[in-house]
Amino acid sequence: MHQVAIWGAGSMGRMHADCYRQCDEAEVKYVIDHDMEKARNIAALCGAIPQVHPDAALEDPKVDIVDVCLPTYLHRECVEKAAHAGKHVFCEKPIALTPNDAKAMTETCKQNNVKFGIGHVLRYFPEYEMAHDMITSGRLGEIGVVRMSRTGPFPKGWGNWYLDDKRSGSLLLDLSIHDFDFLAWCFGDVERVFARSVRHDRPLEYAVAIIRMKCGVIAHVEGSWAHPAQFSYKFEVCGSLGMIESDSRKTQPLTVLTGDVNTGKQGVAVPESPLKDKHPYLREIREFLAFVDGETIPRVTPDDALRALEISLAALKSAKTEEVVQL
Ligand SMILES: NC(=O)c1ccc[n+]([C@@H]2O[C@H](COP(=O)([O-])OP(=O)(O)OC[C@H]3O[C@@H](n4cnc5c(N)ncnc54)[C@H](O)[C@@H]3O)[C@@H](O)[C@H]2O)c1
Image (cartoon, rainbow, N blue to C red; front, side, top):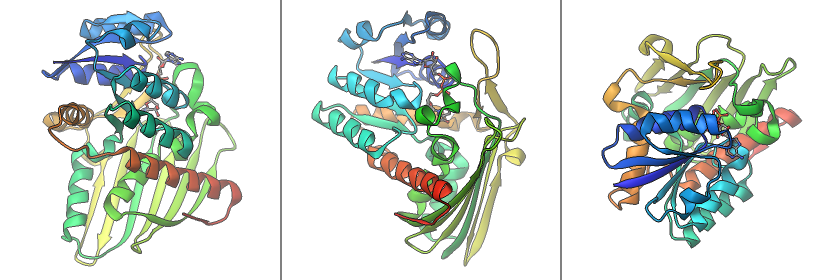
């Protein structure tokens, strides 16, 4: 039985805690958050010990996994602390804010001989997984154009950290990175990116990136934190033998706005799959546990997470300079 410490008791900490509750092969022993009330609330859900400081969890030899659900700017520091303590680490996406940080985290995990997983959960959504399989098996023929979209309200995290580019990386790095990772999973490397973003009236933000993959595919990626009510996502893939489309507003009966556990105010919108036995967050965590057990290789490697980050950074640079950025 794996014993897990969840570090960060916000929206994703709650989501992960809920997933571990459904895993026979793991239990959450500690929930760490600098806000004791938040740690307590999530710890109560899974019979764990709430902690303000990570030391007890990092020093506990029974804990073998640390699950980092902290704001992105804290990922490097905390992943490295966990790795130095000899714990396997699962970390929410984006891996980090800079390639240097991402590489250093990966290296630290390697040096400490611990496994490192990144939560690029889109790869575990059944509709994206099916699209990936249809694309890579050649069933759609030669792919020409892909359109991807991810839109919702502005996420309200702890201390409004999503609003601060230095801590969240902003929309193209935090949200559109899901779609960038999907494109790289299906089509490999990116050749060039052109992006525009509108963000005059923060926190609202809207961006579009046009991406040319090295294989010739053109992708149009829309991201928005300006859609007030419903979080939704969709894609279309057009190939020489056929086209597929998916729209969460048609296929998904539920979008959950996970509120701040203390105030009840709106938090971050988290999509829920209608296919209960294919719950993407549960599947990614189960796969990480199997990876730790040496039973599988992970679907998302740290190098994949680095590549997605590099696409996001290229899109951000293009949006800033209004020029095409080559990768
Ligand atoms: N995979 C997905 O679908 C998805 C969705 C949303 C967010 N995310 C990612 O998950 C991560 C967490 O996002 P979130 O929305 O859960 O954030 P959040 O703001 O809801 O939660 C962050 C938690 O960290 C705590 N915290 C902040 N600084 C701390 C510190 N120094 N020490 C201890 N605790 C601290 C806060 O009190 C808060 O409870 C981010 O990297 C985000 O990009 C992923």
